[in-house]
Image 1 (tube, rainbow, N blue to C red):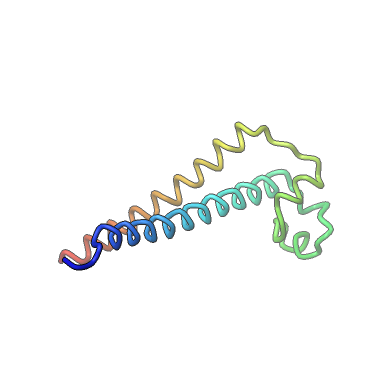
Image 2: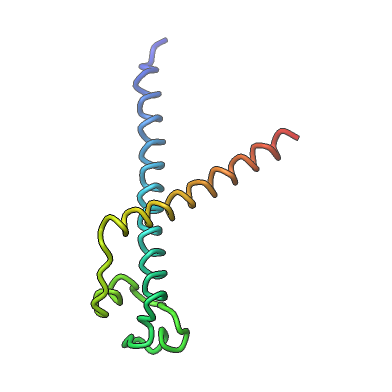
Length: 108
């Protein structure tokens, strides 16, 4: 071989890892947003929200984390982390099941 095969393979692996990490970070952010939205709805933050859209929809349609702060609602970090982790795990499990279903469909 005239080229550095190990370098090329390592570079491809690094690129794949970067794509995965970016997706995982986006999933974690989405889990945080979903948690905040669910908590804002649970505590009825929409009732006192300054956004008319939230009051009309009777749920948070804006920045739920900011809504919780404005309402003075504080959820302990350990509880928040555990619940966000559960939401993240559900997302990853759904992806896994979808990929397995795709792989199963490809074998037939």
